[in-house]
Length: 442
Image (tube, rainbow, N blue to C red; front, side):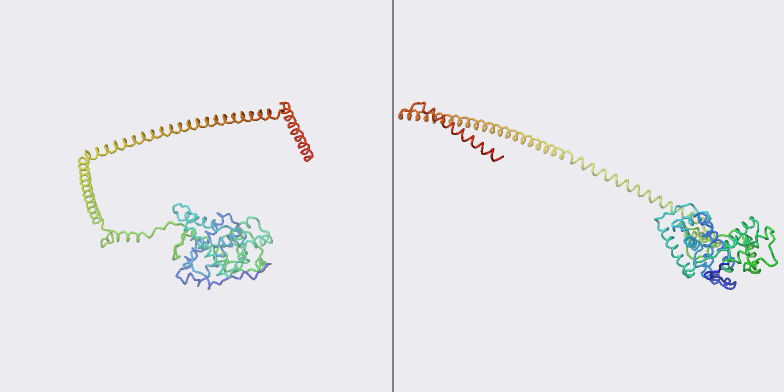
């Protein structure tokens, strides 16, 4: 056998009878119903979230342990159940997001209480409040348990017990179902998991009439006692005799997962209506006749006021229409000619301005053309004068050369020789320069 000293959260019957819920005025039947209701929420939400059975079992045990120290009147059953599922999913290494848990519990509340279907917006104020409350409730759970959340379930002992006893497979499934149902009761906080496993096996064998060894008794081998097993069978029988658990509004504040406000009591609504309508008769019924008379008189007054307003508006409109019409008739013959005269004068002025501009443009163009022509003529005259002066210079040079030749007596051949020498001299110098340039580049 495996014994752990961590799982030590067990209470006696006296401690359960003096629970915090009883101190707040909640009777035993109401507390039992709320415990079953919370466990149903945990089981159904686990199925919708596709969690393993170990997560639901851990969540239900945490739920019972928490309400052994806290009252149902101070902590909401729905909020605590959601926090237990969220915490158990992390303890059993199958975590789910807070968003998923909140949406599932929101949908379950709508289905269970037949509320109108509504969409829970993740970015709404309602969702942020639910998420903050989920985290806050989880902190309360951990605080009350001292952060010791270890849980041992009877399921792991059932298969070993039935294997050693050699029972059929039908008995094994029945015992497993009874172990799941036992989590809705306070057996998990009253007895150890070994005792609950033996009681479940005993109840399943009694139902299927399967004999178990009694000499020596089989439960002694598994560290259980007969009184504990009988108590487990009695609690399970009482659980099956109860009707389906319904929600009982014990929590002081609003614990709804939906944003719709629940309907108030019909008596309170009737009293509010009578007060708003001006009271009622002595018998408690509202004064329907007086109300109808008041309504009719008020309607007549309103209609008369509306008609008076309409008539006054019509009169005002007629007066406003007549006054501007007369003014227009008086002002039109005087105002229209002035406007026409002004427009005609402006048009004539604009036309005169355009004509003057066109004339000035023509003058400018003509002046430019005349300037161009005069400039061209002057340039031609200057060129002709330059040519004439050059011709006169050449003629004067020729005359001076002829006069020199006559005075010296040199023939014209000497002149030709001098020209040849000059050309040869220039050619020789050019060849030398070319050779120098070639040597330089090479």
